Image 1 (cartoon, one colour):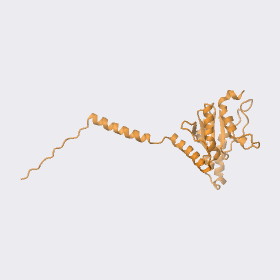
Image 2 (cartoon, one colour):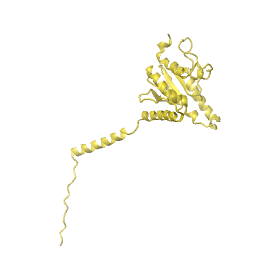
Image 3 (tube, helix red, strand yellow):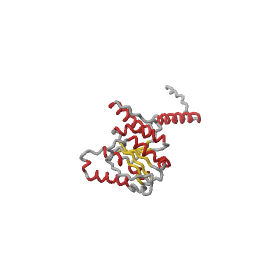
Image 4 (cartoon, rainbow, N blue to C red):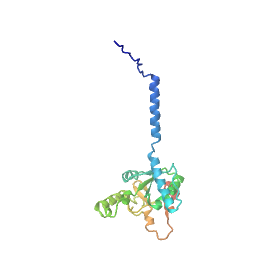
Length: 225
């Protein structure tokens, strides 16, 4: 009768050293994955700079791209509705990355804001208007939405004007007109570049002036001199 040979089997044992080794490997893998996942800020920066670079290439312009430590944060209308109520100045660039003026002045606004030590300029994109075709713009729904957004921005407009030598009467904001620089304080729209650009027939006003005038509100003491 043939004998059956038995294989020698070594029972696997988890040691503390092996557990720590495996845990370390897992941590390294997870860290490598996280490092390679682009942050929201870097994705947004790439979006802005890619738009600027593409325009430069197509039109032989030399508009500057943004550095990593720029002042911009994107904002929605709902978020803006809350932020504009701050007792501090709230600066907003209402714009579109398909618009030449936007692409030209993104870097310029960032430079002036940095000079004035402004920590944040909010980017509010004109997506609703821009993404609505001609037929959509004829609908009641579209006009109701435009009216809703306008009412949010224009709430308490000029409420700080009376008796002040700092604030000047501003025209109502128009959602369909962009780009526009807006400044809010205590829920009031106290600067709106549309007020001047729509009535500009002297060529004395331009976007360089809009930028310096709007952002200078951060230095309120200089405005009273």
